[in-house]
Image (cartoon, rainbow, N blue to C red):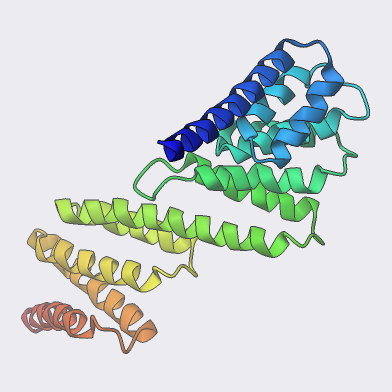
Length: 271
């Protein structure tokens, strides 16, 4: 019984502290003491209470506009939203800081964070990649603007990662064409991926799928188009096997090559 009272007392005291804190915060929100709001916003941010910090900086942002603290308020406003994982709003405020306060000490970090927030919003490859393109563009602009920054290497890594995602998106789209039997469209999409991203880690997969699509396109073509398309398949085989001689797909690739070559030889004999 005595132990239960102690536990109840501790819980009651904790609740009282929490309610007291909530009460003070509510009073602060209604207050006209903007300096106090700014100071507490910084304190809340440092304590990891990003939602409270963000609300306070939202309230004082316009008040401090034009003062020496304006860029600092904007910086904490952006960082508070980032802390809440609201990357869209965080990126918006970092962009606003960058475009408004050209001489700010937060300029370099803000320029980087604009791109990084787009990076954090980039969805899986199957979905629309608009934010992925924006992340790449923002990181490229950061490198141009801050070529000596310590963040250049990270920016380059993000650009490469996002580029690979765009290739994966193209690969998934092309594979869909392939699965549906639209081999001509698949070949076009795969070639475009290789032309745009020649150093991608998906290069072997893309080239093999081009070879396979070329073969299946030839195999299903009317007689008048078979000759040209089987010749294209042979050419694709040499390109693929020349670049990846030890590939695990070599047996299947050779089978398609031999079938294509056999058609060409028979055609030459009949000519």
